[in-house]
Length: 96
View (cartoon, one colour):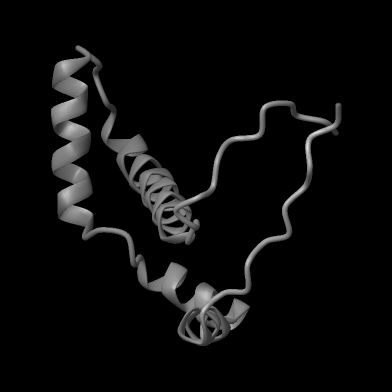
């Protein structure tokens, strides 16, 4: 028996307004400003992770590592902000 597909509920008006204000230009501006975390915090994290994993991190790679971590943190924040209704459940069967 095929599982019934549920129609997604309409989002609240406030949620639409919040999403609408995040235009591509606004996202690019936030990305350019490095909105995820201050650089020194990421630098401390890089140092701590390097010590914990016994990795020698070359100074030439630090800026590239910071940039990648900032991108990952921004993606994680966007994922965490996505609203899900309380009754949302994982699909029992995934079909492409």
